[in-house]
Structures are given as structure tokens and as C-alpha cells.
Image (tube, rainbow, N blue to C red):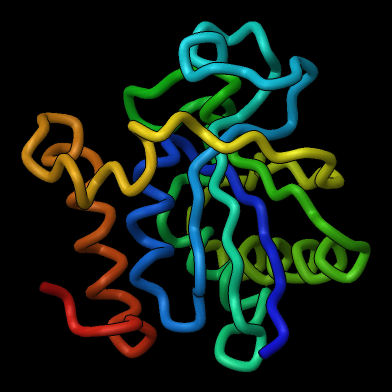
Amino acid sequence: MSEETATLGGGCFWCLEAVFKDLRGVTWVMSGYAGGHVANPTYKAVCDGQTGHAEVVQVKFDPEQLSYADLLRVFFAIHDPTTPDRQGNDVGTQYRSVILAHSEAQAETARSVMKEITEANIWGAPLVTQLVPFTVFYEAEPEHHDYFAQNPWTGYCQVVVAPKVAKFRKQFADRLAKAPA
């Protein structure tokens, strides 16, 4: 099996991780930080907005089961790509919508999917998603790994993460890795 890697930011990484773990063709997902100027950032430093990093997920996937374009279509469906530096009540550059392309082919596919989303007027507003070259990924601290699965009853997970996961499962039922528990 050949594997590709995608790095995407669309608000809180707990939401993205929970959704992508359910997507057929995804073999691995890790929350972390990318796109900034500070080496080895911490969650606190990223949340303070001084590192330039976004909360991101790194996703490994099998392109024979899931194309990069389809991965991006899910990405654009599970966060609001029209609000700069914000997802709901989460505000700051660390919550920006960003695609960190690992190759020129990924960048070209991202431009094409962004054009498709724009022309379909799915969001009713212009996309503000940044498309930048991938440089480095810093894995988040262990307490952020698989956060939603480990903490489903916390307030944030109930109010923010669970509705996004439910929306994804409904909209992409045919793409789930397995039936939801």
C-alpha cells in the first residue's frame, strides 16, 4: 500500500482528528502544530498566539481508497473556511483554515478543490483558507491524542466536537471506515 500525508488546519484539532479517524482510507491521524516560526511549540504557546502555528492534523491515507481531493472535500465540509482566524467561539490565528501542501501536486489539487467549492457557492462567502507549502509538523502533547474518544463527555466535546462528528457521519455515511458506535 502506498500512503500519502496531508496536513490541514480548520479550527480546533480535536474536531478534525475525530472526523478523519472515522474516514475510510485514513490510516493514521495526529493532532499537532504547523505553519509557525517557533520550534517545538507547546499547546499553551500556540493558544497564546505567539508562535504563528495553527492547530492542525496530520493525516496519512491510502490514495487507492481515498483521493486527496476527496479528503479536502471532507475538510471543507467540516469547518467554516470563510471566517479568518476563527471557528465558532475559537478565535486566533491558531484556528485559521489552512492547507499545508506536501507537494506541488497537492497544491494543484487544493487549488482545484477550492475553485470547485467557490463555484458551487457552498458557503455563500469567499474562502479564506490559506494554501502554503508544508515545512514541519510538531506533534501535540499526549493529552491531545484521540481527545474526543478519551473525553466525550467534556463540555467542549459535547457542544463543539460531537455536532461536527455527527454532521460528518450523516453527510459522508458512505465513506465511514466502520459503523459509528
